[in-house]
Length: 105
Image (cartoon, rainbow, N blue to C red; front, side):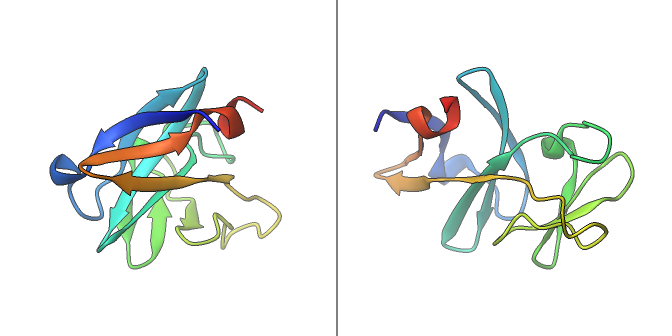
């Protein structure tokens, strides 16, 4: 496993999507209370950056067409077959880290 820093925990606003790029893959990183999630960062509906969207309840909403994905599963309510892949993500000290090897694969 190759840990790569994608954000600073203390600077990551709660429930505000943030952009990260790891191994050439767009990611969206979301702090949700005391948890953090990293998901594939492009909407499966039209390819928009999910970091340009917003969080509503427990859903990540695409800023382009309002397509929504559950933060905990990545599943879209509009089309359950569309799932934003979730990646291993954790906080160490003040660093938000992801597994770069998992993302590259």
